[in-house]
Amino acid sequence: MAGGITWFEIPVVGFDRAKKFYERLFDVAITEQQIGQALMGFIGSHEDGIHGAIVAHEWYIPSEHGVLVYFDAGDDLNMMLARAEAAGATVVIPKTLISEDIGSMAVFRDPEGNRIALHSKH
Image (cartoon, rainbow, N blue to C red; front, side):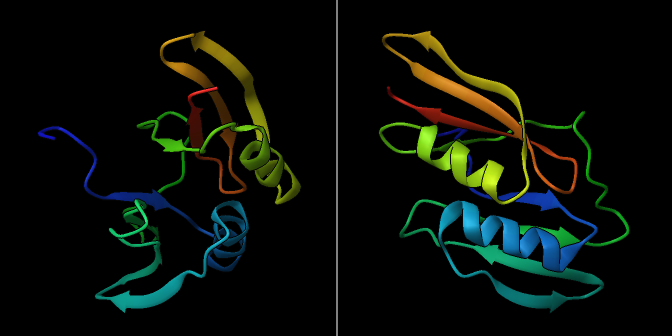
């Protein structure tokens, strides 16, 4: 689909802390690679539907004021939201019904200070 998300990068300062957080959140192993001055931690693959990385670099500054990315949380986002909290996230907006057709959303602040959103059909 034109306009769909093909890649994302989440700014981090505490790379190891962020790596542990996102590995726990998505239940995946993150592969690290130094690319130029950036330390990148690759999350998932195109096959599993997650295509992005956590990135530590002087140009990447975590913020709750930047772009908000919504991750698919499966059938019910409560499980992923609970994993986020257990891993150190702060819930900003609890599970909230958008509409019966669209489903529900929630927003949390990761341990780096970024706002991240979750979406589910229920």
